[in-house]
Length: 93
Image (cartoon, rainbow, N blue to C red):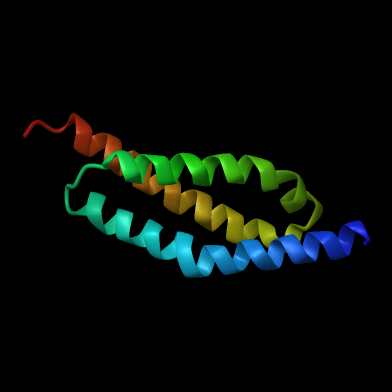
């Protein structure tokens, strides 16, 4: 198996997981924090898993610029969630 075909298989699996699992959960978290909610232990565990996976796939993303825009948008979404969640934690009440 060539590096390119291996990358394609990995990318396909990651994109499927992103669209069916991670994006819906991220959007639900965004709604939660946008409404002033705080992240619970399960939400934080989810984000830790996402960030750990992102570190692992960065070499592949670097090799394939066609995935960089999507990855940048996903990172921006997760950044927005964590930034808002932190603000919610610092808000009394």
